[in-house]
Image (cartoon, rainbow, N blue to C red):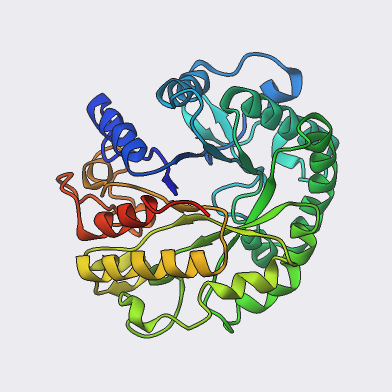
Amino acid sequence: MGFTPWPHDATLGAVSFTYTEILAHGDRVAHHLDLGIPWQESLEGSPYPAAVEDELNGRVANTPFGSRVYLAITPLNSARDGLAANWGASGAEPLPVPWDTRTLADQEVIDSFTNYALDLVQRFQPDSLNFAIEVSELALNDPAAFQDFLDLEAAFVASLRTQHPNLPLLVSVAQKRPGSAEAQPIAAAMPAAVAPTDWLGVSVYPYAFFSHADRGDPANLPTDWLSQSVGLAAGKPIAITETGWIAEDLVVPAFSVNVPATEAHQDAYVAELLSEANALDARMVVWFTIADFDALWNGVLGQDPLAHLWRDTGLFDGAQVARSGLAAWDAVLALPID
């Protein structure tokens, strides 16, 4: 059980609070790196931009030696419809020439991404590696590019198996409402992506991305909201690689989203999530953000509508006061492991 170190504000105090609390309330740190890839530097084996090094070194320095680490990276962009952005001095940057015309199946892309992954495995020493965050979205957005990804995956897995034969490898699915129009092509595509891996990762935010009525109340979840993942996993274990639930009303006009929710609803989801994950013998559960990030959203995120979907999912509220769901989480964390 763990969290990402996503902070509630862009300050050293917020970062310190975040690491203190995720280590107090979890037994693993989830390093989710989705800004892009330093493509040319990784291909050449040259130093990364200083901003990239600072981010990586800061994460490693704040993760106590010997901690369990789940590491997530991806060759896909944030829209999950093509090659990841270039991770450069200013963060996620447009792809430079010639990367802007390369595909996931190009050898330079495969080599660069593999080099990057091997470097990060050496730095973070993870006990599991997700190398394709929400790759199911690529199958929905660009089926031809998904086939290119399968070529990348075959070469990537072969390289990682050679150098790290005992490291569990996984890809993740962005789960949709069971039986929905989106769920059907995902069910058709994912077995090929899961086949070379050890686990299936599950990214699931039903309050935002399911389409049933009154979806802010977990009592209305479909009975197979999580167990549907078993059908995609081809007999392999599943891991909840990211999830969360709002504790306040979610109103995002840009996406025509209006989902009422309360702290009690979040508390109920924590209980439902952990019960279902236990029933499925999930390898881990990652709650994405431990504290609401109102300050970050109003500041450096510029009130981004997309980020708003997750802003109020913390087990601490925007004033860093614990919500009731945290006690439910901690109670399960304290149970002995069979």
